[in-house]
Image (cartoon, rainbow, N blue to C red; front, side):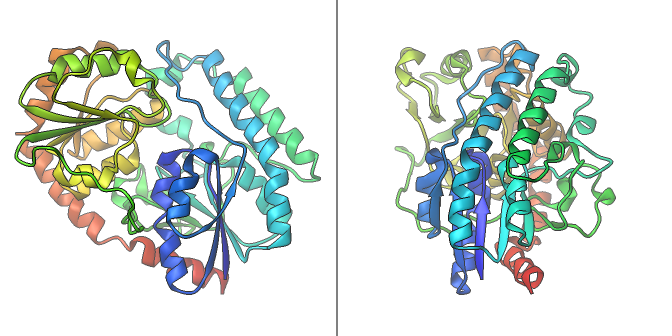
Length: 394
């Protein structure tokens, strides 16, 4: 079986799906994985054949919230990536047709591609799932970020661009999958069903296989300089992380204390952050699993993958969500006693430092983490995911 996987070039979307690749390869299947250049090294390490797409996402920071102008900027990047990537995917997969096409739910070019290739398709959902009566805007309606932005013209312009691209290939495009208006026949959801909003409203089209254990061969290892010191891991993600003041607040909060700090500053010019305290190691990227194995606490934006890794390794987390989708995850994590949340707008060094100290001794969080460790252990993971793909293909 030839399995094609198409995912937008965001580490928070690519990395959760990569464990499917070695499981597929171990069963004798072929895998072709298409994504943008930033994620190609990680994909190549999984053993898949790689198609590099001309799609990249910038590091962003939206200090004034989710405004029309900010949303239009992001949606224009996304629609341009679709227009430029589609002919490459068509050429590659027309020459070497897949038996099944798996795609990240938010990767719109793949949703058009499924119609043009006429092959069985499967949506891979690395975060919360949505359906016809539970869209993303429904789930985040209480978030101030969405309420402060008119969802009108940027989205309408994006929809028009997507429809024009699809029409130029003689097909159609339906509205944004995150709003639940277009649901695949099969969806592999990479979170435990217990963590899903309104979980009892999802039918058999949705298979909650849970987070996938990262079983790829590792070329890079990391360990703390002092294995006996408390280790704090700070990661603000790879997309909405262009916020130098956040990192400087972390320096002020934990600099030259008895914490050993590993701080990921993806895409940022580290020199622009100013003097780095002696107890900080600041790098563009850390092998997250290695850090989690040693961490005492985590400060994060948070992505689902970071949250699930923290739970797996028993690490309490302080969440500082920069955008509404992260706020949605944060609310669910706090309700499940997996983390505690802070407001980015009100963040200062003392508030952050106190929150990290408190969460180390938060027994409710400890109990919540232990419960979800059992929940995750009971999920089927990559093996179940590939079982489902094989049965779906027949």
